[in-house]
Length: 115
Length: 112
Image 1 (cartoon, rainbow over the protein chains, first blue to last red):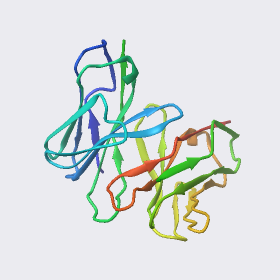
Image 2: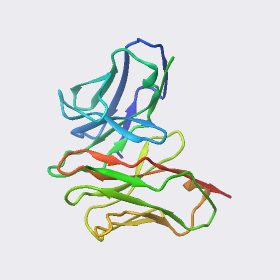
Image 3: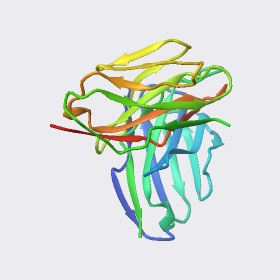
Image 4: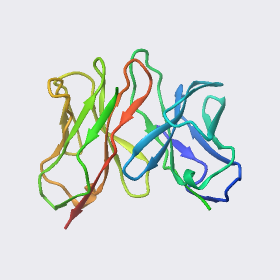
């Protein structure tokens, strides 16, 4: 079974702190994704990586950056956390498919609260 | 542009009732279609998928048929259980890209 793990289930940070969210997958997937989930808005893509050191902005990248130094690990960084970044953060991975999309496999999520 | 519109929730049903959650999409080309489920406190899990027109995806008693003519992928189950209480997300692949477009989710509660 594909397993996607996230470093924390719950996190509380203060405004202005630098925050790191870590994600690891064990199925050698090329693609990895970071989403945020908010009530009534569904999932919104923050960043996407299709290979080591490669990244692409999603729909809402402002205030976030990412790092992918190894194939299995994808980090989301909040450079200076703000209260409007309080949310559930979901990591996902998938195989790379030319001309289409394979299903994505999700981690359990990190609920981040910024006070 | 690409989008997915789902039936607004929350939806509350009694056990053994028939379930339909509507989903329509806007996309170019011939996207793959997915239903994901999120149980309380967990991440999303793939429930079923369909990759071409008229395909029917099925799993755990749930079914959805890819209807290209109506751009729909409605989720159905003949007899729901309390354990089906969750949030359900419809999604489609985003053209030639590697990404998915998700609907806003529909919260389903089943009462005993």
